[in-house]
Image (cartoon, rainbow, N blue to C red):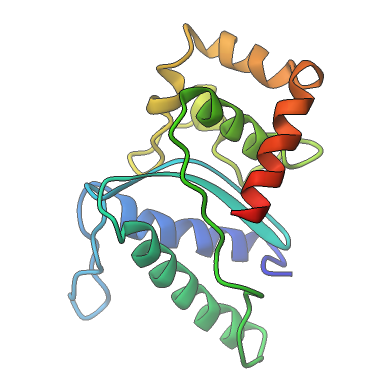
Length: 178
């Protein structure tokens, strides 16, 4: 497990916010953390107890690697200290797939949001940002939402899972196999 309780999820989300917010943040000594706001956009995410999914729009070639290196590295230090453990936390290097079709972006966002069984009640996802319940500068659903006429249309797209199951299975295979 990489997230054991609410605090773990919160720390990870705050790390994403640290690097993706509009204005640079500083550590306790006044040093600025790496600022990636213009280089990368977090379009969708879902944190699960033993893994996470993110849909990223990357403007700079190395932005995704830099973001994950910073977030995962800091999170592992936190996790190891909190749980008095040593060594790596993540099993493998992250897997990434280039997505160049709008319909795939739509389906990937749905796959990410439907990952938890109780996806409407799951707190550690970008779905509330899509449905207009939450707003934050570091979560940027607008690229996906611009492909829909309304929030209700996106919500219906989520619930229309069975009709699109074959496409979802293809995406799952492609994402798993890079």
